[in-house]
Every structure is written in C-alpha cells, then in structure tokens.
Amino acid sequence: MLFGWLPFSILCFSRMEGHRAVLFSYIGATLFLPCYTYNLPGGIPPYSKETAAGLGVLLGMMLYDNEKLTQFRIQLYDLPMLVWLLCPIPTALTNGLGIYEGLTSLWSQFFAWGLPYFAGRLYFTDQEKLTDLAKGFVIGGLFYVPLCLFEVRMSPQLSNIVYGFFPHSFAQQIRFGGFRPVVFMKHGIVVALWMAVSSTVAFWLWKSRQVKEFFNILPMGWVVFLLILTTILCKTTGAWILLLLGCSSYYLFRFTGSTLFLKLLLLFIPTYTIVRAFGFLDRHIIQDLFRSFVPQERLDSLSIRLLQEDLFSFKTKERLFFGWGGWGRNRPVDPYTGKQLIAMIDSLWLVVFSSKGIVGLFSMTGAILLGPMVAFAQKDDVAEEKKQYDVVITVLGLAVVLTMIDGLANGVYNFAFILIPGSLISYITASK
Picture 1: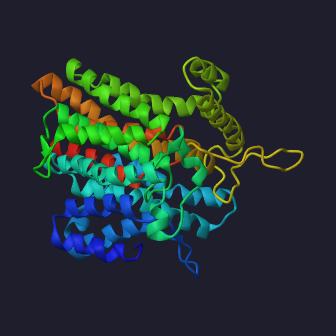
Picture 2 (picture 1 turned 90 degrees about the horizontal axis):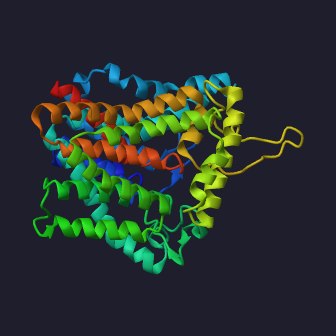
C-alpha cells in the first residue's frame, strides 16, 4: 500500500483537477495507509506514510502540473515554514550529530510538513477550492464513521485484519468500559481529533447553509449527527472539549460578527507554550484549576503531562536555541545515577521544543498559525465593510487552531491538516 500509493496519486493527477488530486492523495493517505516505516538500506532516508503521501503528490505535480511548480514564488509569509524545515540542520550540527543526521531529519520534515503546506499554497487559491477543501474533511469523516463504529463494537482490529499489525499499545485504546477506534491511524487520540474537526467543519457548513446535502442523498443535518455521534463514541475527553469549542464558536462568530473569540483561542497556544517552557506558570496552579470538575483518572493524566513539561523544559534550557536533536538526547536524567527521570513525552509542542529548541518551536507554531491569524484578521475587515460571513475561511482557520490546541496535550498531528495554513495564505494574498 505504501509503495502503491505513488502510482495511485499520479493517476489522480492524470484524471482530475489538481486541487482534487491533492485532496484524494493526502486525505486518502491519512485515512487508509498503514502507520508503518521502512528503514531502507544504503543511507536512504526512511519511507513512511507521510513520505508516500508527499512523494505521490510531488510526482503527480511534476508530471501533470509542472507549470504551477515553476511559476510558484516564495513570499514573506512562507518564512516561518522555511525556518522550520531547515531547523534540523543547525540542531544536528550544534549537537555534534553530523550533517547526515540533519539532512535525514530535514527529509522527513519536508514530506510531513513542508509538502502539504506548499501543496495548499499552490492549489487552494480561491473560494471554490477552499470549499472543496472543507468538504474533503467532512467526506473523510463520513468514510470513517462505519469503520469507527465497527471498532467501537468489535475493538480496534482493522489494522490487524488488513495490514497484519497494530500500530500502538492496545491497552491505551480501552476507555470508559469499552474501546476507542484506531482504524488505520496511529492512535485512538488521532482518530478522535480527526472526527472532532470533521464534525466542527460539518456543523459550520450546515448551520450557515453553505452545504445542504452530500452525494445528493444525505441531508447535512444527518451528516452532522453521524459525525458528532461518532466523535462522542471515540471516548476521548480532549476531542469532546474540542468539539464543544468548535461548535459553540459558530454562534459567537455568527451573532457578534467578529473573530475575537477565535483570535483569543489562537493566542492561547503560543501563550501557553511560552509560560510553561520558561516556568512562568506553576503546574500545581493548573492542577488545582481542574481538580474540582475533572475525574481523578483524567486529573492524573494531566498531572503526568505537566510533570513532563517541567522536566523536559528544564533539560531543554541547556540547548535552548536548537534543542537536543533525536536519539533520546532530550530526555531528562538523574545527574547522579544517569537514569531517565521520566520515560514518556506526550505533547507535540514539548517534543518540538526539546528536540528543536526555541527556534523550532517558534517557527513551527508560526508556520501553522500564521494562515489562520491572517484569515481571522481579514474576516473582521470583511464583516465590518460588507456585513457578510465567509464561513469556509473562518472554519478552516478554526480547524487548524483546534489541532494545535490538541498538540498542547498530545504528541500527535495529522499532515492532512497542514494543507490548510498554506491554503489560507494563498487565498488571502490572492484576494488583496
């Protein structure tokens, strides 16, 4: 499947419009490719799900849309992504890991982050294509509804049945007396995030009457019901919170005509990472804040994550600018015994901060949040001048914000969502 995805992506480019080929390639890879990595011989970088998706899109563009590639020009908006992609080089060199280590990490980062970002920049430049992008996430969620329901009832077995292996710890998928689905993703948390974001996008399109039905037979109200129900059955507390935030944000946006609340959500992400990375906010204050309304099991999980933040952040200050790199060098150890103080690291922002330093954290955060930031600012101008709501642009920006909020607690991300920041930047710059 991983190697067969290349000709499939090329076939998509040969048979359909470029932006739809990108959607089929990236969303299809996200949903159905196995979470597996081939460690190839001869110094060749690893080949994974992210590599297969990105390489397939790149080959399709080169064979069928090379003119679009040659005409593309880097803009100032792209600077954070470029810094993020190049960050592995100084990280490797400052840690004495050598240039090969830096180039290998750059290769992986380019396919996982850079290619979907620039595919978004190249192909989603107008309202119609951005609407197709939003619909793509909803359709992807619909495809996962029966698969998720199967695993909720039968336990996470589809990866075993189809590919012959399970991508993570089975015990972590047992939750609230049942199972949370994994399907073909890495963890139940990733599936829950996907369903929560798909549900949010569908809810906004339904309430705003942007889309009335799918496939000319399924009313949008039923689509929203199925997606929200499946999200709830994913049994992940964080996804439930994100779903509530996403759907309630529509009413604040609709009745105030402002993106102020969405901007505050966005600003919460870098604010939290800064105050926690530099120890400005004690973890016990956060624990006390949640103690009165969070179940003890979830509070224990939160406490572990906050302890990780303290220990890893303290260790990272020794390599503040470019981090510790890979190979577990970022893990805090007891100075007397040399043993690891904590084995796990859960949060995406903490993984980036400890391995790539403050340069990596700021550039990654800027690369992903700059598109929504520009879109939210643009939307206030439109609402003020024309009194119209551009729902698609706003909900896509919100989708990115929700995924980054999830990254404050969980160390997972979905490369399909990285299509959105580049798309929003291209749309906003083209409309000026």
